[in-house]
Length: 283
Ligand SMILES: NC(=O)c1ccc[n+]([C@@H]2O[C@H](COP(=O)([O-])OP(=O)(O)OC[C@H]3O[C@@H](n4cnc5c(N)ncnc54)[C@H](OP(=O)(O)O)[C@@H]3O)[C@@H](O)[C@H]2O)c1
Image 1 (cartoon, helix red, strand yellow):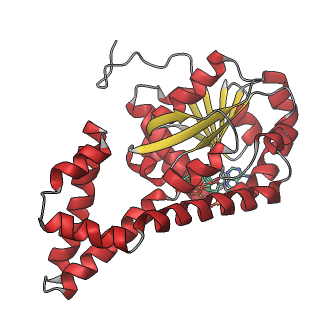
Image 2 (cartoon, rainbow, N blue to C red; image 1 turned 90 degrees about the horizontal axis):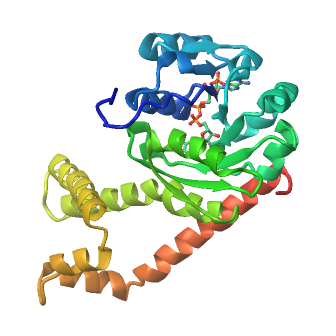
């Protein structure tokens, strides 16, 4: 039977999600919307209130016992804070080495090498870098798997992340730092730009609420247009009449060095991502 998204149900996924917070819940919601049955998801979650919410809102099993959560899983999603990953995985090492699920980590900056040390060397590990719009099903995830992960294992991981948005595969683990800088941190850049646009509108005479709504709707609409079309330069040119208002604004931005500013910002975020990853040990 086809579900409302016209996809075949994911019968072959048996999922454990360790950490039922923001990202864990987004994945549970996304997978259920895509037709995965509730009995195929178990969440390992340490907080009692969070477990009760998972059972109430989604009808999935939630347990404080992570070994029980992963026992029958063919994909284990690691969705705890980066600093908690080692403590979560170390007690599971024996179980993971026995049952050999795909370990899919969304933890920012925790490298494949560290994950393998904690899961066991033979366990297939996939790293995902999603972004916050995943919480509303409109995320984009950079996905990295090294040569030890076969195509079927990668496909399982990809399906999990596709439940909360798009997926882009990257070829090197270092590229995930650039993904972090671009799409991981990226929503904040657009929020900041929208804030500044709203503030400028207010300074120039609009009511603050009207300026805020205009900025947010512009952000949303421009995003939708870019998503359906994809040719960013042409879209920009179509809005920019010769001698018009947009041209006046863009010329001001270019003269102020917007290209250099954005490059430096994303380069700084990439560098910071690499520095933060070093605390979890070598790759
Ligand atoms: N949220 C995002 O937008 C986003 C984007 C990209 C990547 N990520 C990654 O996703 C991961 C999770 O982020 P999040 O925002 O979902 O964090 P979160 O809301 O804090 O969720 C983590 C959950 O894990 C629980 N937990 C802690 N220790 C545990 C344990 N030993 N066993 C089981 N559950 C445990 C926490 O419970 P307590 O609160 O009781 O400790 C919390 O409910 C992070 O590694 C982050 O880097 C998140």
